[in-house]
Length: 277
Ligand code: ATR
Image 1 (cartoon, rainbow, N blue to C red):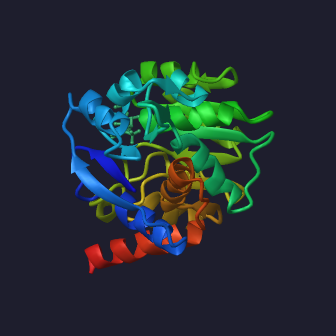
Image 2: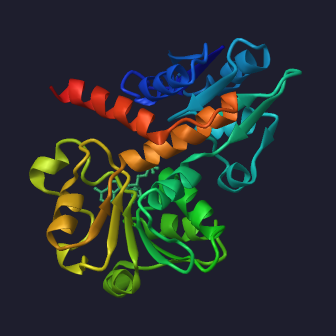
């Protein structure tokens, strides 16, 4: 059986190494290939799932919204976000869309024994990743979410994805962060060469030793935010956690097999190591 990672670009996606390691660990004769599909190609590639060419898809930018419009049905999280990162062929020419990003983020925290029931979470950023996280946190009992973003209107729109989320303006960021148990960076600040400049998405003095600080940026694995947080005594969660745990849920949705996240993480780390070496 064959699944594909689709989007544009897909050359640097870690999905194939993670999924192929997961398939191999179970002795499954499945493989993931990369298929570059630019904007506008979403409906066509989903027809290839309906026709049985692919058993499923991992969907990345810029196809997540297009794919959500093209599938035959959507899970609850994708319906709210109007975006999917996973497509599953379900026989008789049907394709179902799912979003595993938010649940993957939640599972990455659970994997580090971080509780979310009754927790207060502050999200920095309000893009696609933030929206999936807000939707997933909104389903957890007593989890209160605040969101700040460079463009405030996007924070307000993201907050609407959960009954208990609130957008906060920049002036109120210090209070929102002080009240939070968990701070999550979902912005692209800290990615790639930002690490050399030491760029972090909030004033460092707002981070306290009793915070958990999570970053969804995984290139580099140790962002300037995570090193600063560690220096200030906070517990940290790196961005590979979300990537791996959302991939575990994708593999489960396609094959019915739940892979060991450690297998997928090792494959991703080996690939990242090779690229930087
Ligand atoms: P993703 O799918 O990874 O969430 P995205 O949807 O493009 O990516 O969202 C990027 C997020 O990073 C947005 O919240 C964006 O803020 P805006 O809504 O104001 O664009 C945020 N972001 C990107 N560059 C930033 C910067 N230099 N400073 C602060 N926030 C930034």
